[in-house]
Length: 249
Length: 236
Image 1 (cartoon, rainbow over the protein chains, first blue to last red):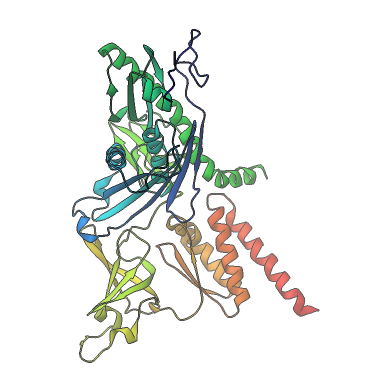
Image 2 (image 1 turned 180 degrees about the horizontal axis):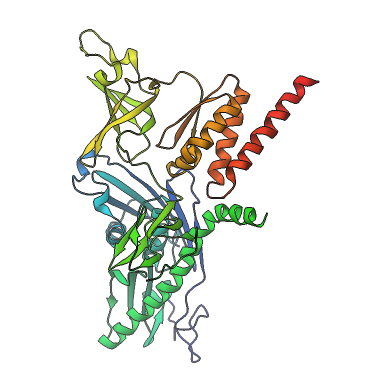
């Protein structure tokens, strides 16, 4: 990535990977991929490949971390050593610890923490392949895993980023755009309640550009939300199919 | 004041179910006078109450429930029992032995050791205290024979059927004793392994097709068919 890209967006407004400014990368979502976890999900967001597994609510271990008045959500965001071009040390880095916290805090508003005091829900996020925007894809997958585990939720949490590349506000930045672009705004969002649970910004934007970036990211979130719901339903569609075939009989 | 779903529609968490003059039932919540879903499941409205049967859920203890659990730890005056719920249950020695208990006289691990399966009743539970079990009633106690199977706890009511119609029918047709733990664990004890196998097949079928109508008839049919095929070799 050291060789200089003259332009990240060409004259026709097409980006390096052939997308338009307001286009998402191709997405694939799958629920219930890990039988050993209470709930699990897999996401392919462009070149990102991420697994999420949820456990609980269950007794907290170690016990002193349990809270008397609410449930504790723990998240572990981890990148596999082979997830990036240069080997990443498997030990948790500063960045991973921070992202774990950010992801946890973006998911917490969706849970009814006060319903099951003294218990804990664990979410493990494993990035198998990274290409920019892993925190957003992780949140999307983690929310699905939690829902699949049967933990009550206010809404599914979706996340998507927008940013500024070559003076244009664009949706869903990939790695090169993230590194060479001017700004990156990840947004996590609960569409049914119209509530933002995560809003970060890295870089410089004018207030007007920022507003446009947030709106664009929320628009992207809504599109992903539909796919998320679809993925969750697909796993349980079997139940529905049986029912429909019975009705036809 | 509409509802936004068809009968028995599959919904995901956060889906808007109804607005205004409706009451939130199980697995739903209210925000700004709107009812939303909490889990993935099938919704239904019954007399202004929006109810949802969750397809994925965990067991939350309730006083009086019969549960099946595994002893995980032998303590000084009782056992810790895992009941597949967010909270581990406690079984006090006096509650299990049904008499006063003196540590000098009784060896707890001789009664139940870790790994033993027990049928017990939830004696007390609230969110601040772990559930306590009791085992001193007829039908409760250590499991010595039979087969165990796990189902999603929310499917148990369907297996019981209306006023126990489904379960009593299975019991009758298969000559099996069946104990339904409300925490989603089922104990099947029959005279022969074939009987147990048949009962398990029937329960599995109910679990898979739990939300279809006319299920009782199909289960009856299944049991009859199997019985005939089992009897055939005898006739030859």
